[in-house]
Amino acid sequence: PIAKPRDEFSTPIKTFLFWKKSAVDGNLEQIADCFLTMARDDQLAVLKNYSKERIKEMSKETKKTEFGFSVRIDIKSGSVMADAILGGKKITFFLIRGTRYRM
Image (cartoon, rainbow, N blue to C red; front, side, top):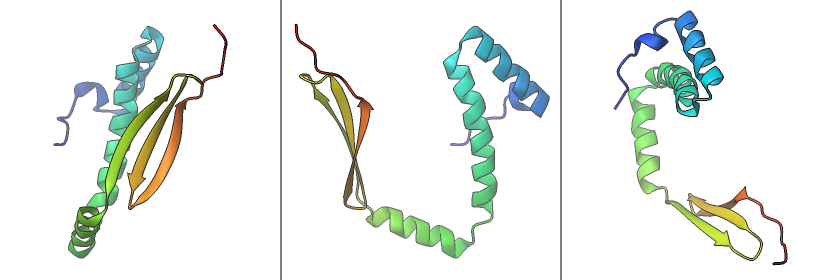
């Protein structure tokens, strides 16, 4: 579902002031709201230009694409890795790259 309009994002000035206050307060969730709202509007504008045929093709491709995600923790090295599967291809991301240490 698309988020309901919020007054703090109703104009560029209000959005900037909301972001600035959030940054000053260290409120990461509100900072993320600012970025997500800007990106959502841009993405929605792009999607609205898609033809019905392109939307059907996107739906068809998405239905047949294999998706997956898992997280692995290597206690010895202190690393946290994420494995993503997209279209049958496995991609590993290091979320936290640890260093080995002795106790």
